[in-house]
Structure formats: C-alpha cells, structure tokens
Image (cartoon, rainbow, N blue to C red; front, side, top):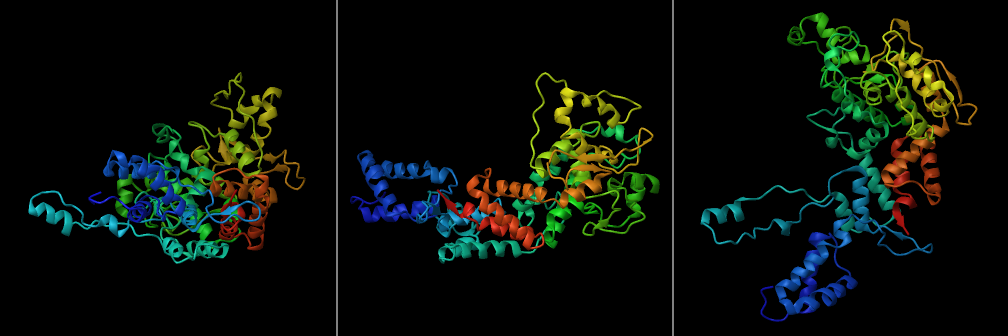
Length: 499
C-alpha cells in the first residue's frame, strides 16, 4: 500500500499469502492467486491501490470458506468421485469432534508490536514493549498437518487415539470446573444431549411446598444443577473404564454425590439445624442415602441397592428432567425410551386432544392415567405408558419410594411393539426392563445411530450402512468400548470423504 511503484503479481502473491494465512489458515492455490489478482485487485485498481487491496480482504472475509467451517473435501478425487478431507479440513474435523475451542491459535505476526500512533512515550512503550498478551497456541494437530502427518486414514486414527488416550483431568465437574473443562467436552456433551438429564434445572418445582413434605426436603434451588453434575461424574467414570459402556449406562447401581466431601462437618450439621434436619436435607438423600451412615466423598462412588437404582434413567437428574412440574411423567419417559433406545416413533399429540390428567388427593398417578386407555388415546399411549410406568418407584424429584398415596407402588410395565420376541413382554420393575433393554442388539444399534448423528451432524443414509456396521462390530468385538466406536466412526469413509 505504501509503495510508489505499481504492485507486481509477485508482490501481490506475498500479500495474499499473508491474508490467507491470517483469515483462512492455509496458503492460496494458483487458482486463488489468479482469481484475486485478475478478478478483484486489478478490476478495482483504478479506485486506488488502498481500496483495491481492501476489496481483496473484503472478498476473502465474505467468502463461504471464512464465514463457515467447510468440510467439502479438498483432497484428490478417487475412482468413486469422492474427495477426502484435506489435511486443513481434518484439523478442524478431528479437533471439533472433541473440543469446542478453535484448533488454531494466534500466530506470532498477529501480536507483533505494530502500534505506531503518535502518542506520549509512556503510551507507546506500554503498547509496543511491555504489553505481551497471552495467546493460545496452535494445537498439535496443526503441527501434524504442517509436518505432513495428517493426510491418510492411518494418520487420522493415530490422532484420534492420541486424543482418546489422554487421561480425564476433571472427573467430577461442578460449577467451578464445568463440563467445558473436561478433557474431551464434546464427548460428555453427547451424553448430555442424548440422555437430556442436563435439562433438569429447567423444570419448575415448587420448592416452598417441598420444605413441608417427606421425601422432598433435600431438593432446594441448587439441587437440580448438582444432580446433573452427579450424572456427569458417573458417565465419565463409566467412560474411563470403557467396558460394556452402554450396558453400564443402562444398568449401573453406582452414583456420585459431587457436592459432598464425604465428611459430616459439625458446623454444617449445626447450620442445617441439627442432625435430624441435616440428614433430611442432605444432597445424598436424593439417592436415599443417610449421610451419617455412609462415608464417601465427591470423588468416591456410592454403591446403591440394585432394587433402587438401575442406570442413568434412574439417576435423579434424568427423572427430574423427564418429569412434570408437580408429578411424574410416564408419557415423556416412555416416549424417550421408544425413540432413543428402541428406534421407534410416536405421533405428535393431535390438535383436538386436551392432554390433561385429572388431579386427585387419593388416587395414584397410574390410576389417574386410566383414562388414556380409551381407544382414541391408547393407540399412541400404548407405545409409551408401559415403558414409563415402571419409573413410578420414584417420586418426581427422583427419590426412591415404596408407597404413593399410602398405597404400595405398582412398578409393572411392558416392552411392546418391537416385533422382537425376546425383547417384548411384561416387566415387573425398572431393573428387569433396563436389563432386558441393555442386552438387546436393537437398543445397541439405536444408540450407535445417535452417536453417528451427533458426530456427523446429520442423519444416516443408505451409503453410511458400512460405517454403522463397522461401529457396531467395533463395539461388540472390543467388549463394549466407546473409544473403539469413535475410532471406527472418525476413520470411516462417512467421516473422511465427501462427494
């Protein structure tokens, strides 16, 4: 811009290389150089060199490649007309499979001391010499790309395994060290999105009423958030073991109480109003645990009775997230199982249906739901209610119970309409239902389908069938390793190629 002589194409090439490095993180191709030189710079040069060069920057900054993260496949075309993701694209694709931050840090030339305004000496010195802001470095994936070690399927597998092998640095997330500070936040993000338990804080509960009711006094304004962190910790624990992951997620009787250090501090007991109130209002009561009878800590597992807890779907966080404001919601819970575990569908509520259950001070929820057995309702409810009713062994804040309205809780249900003989049938309680579901290939394959959709950002197509088969094979042959599932997916043709 400051040169008195006309800008040569060679000089322009150097400027374009710097602009591409800053904005697109790649060098320009010969086609890029010809396009920006002939169609942008020279056509605007009559307006002045400064405006012409500004036009070049504007054109780059409004290009789809800058505005969007593209994965179009910039590699060589193969015999099937497909293009593999270029090393540049693979940096983004692999990095964003596990993290939410950018893989590219800030280059040195971006922080060079270029402050040259006419100012007082002390200001200039501060801006040019002493001010060295911290900046993120490029990830090792960028270094691998620059070294030519991110161009083959084997290179991708090595990179994915390196990320998966890193130990978890934040196994018990909380509000001080949130989910974003886990080692692989998008992995935990998948399970949050899949199970939906992190939505528990969005469900309104009448806290003033809870203070008067047994079985609810442990639930206060921070409880729903804490319960979600408990489930985060449990999932990270299962992923760390990495054996029979889906089965463990659906049947484990373990739990964390992340906001309890395992001790029962006398000051905390006094602040709560004495031992009796301390016990009634303690976080551990969400899991029917008396804190004075169990010694544990936020990093220790609680092993709960098998007839009380069975997997993520009996975690209080999931039960609250899939409940109503004032009661349980067997319809929502059954619909989740039908769609997420059994790969089924349920029609939306018809617009002419007033979907309300009558209130009662004497009838149980199951008894109040008897009206949906009418023909016009049951054709849809028969796919949901039998799956959701076994969870009546918990109140609507997730605490295990044996009585409702003074009557023994009826926990029977059924798995229906799967057309799989060994899967369909009546169940006596949640554990029988969840163990049968956990052992089903249908459930496993439905789960893997959701894994595919999350990491690919789209639904599966017929052309993805081999990828799904490979993911299923990887899970079965590795004794239920979720890591091997991700390796199979992130090294598949579905992930690596575009057409």
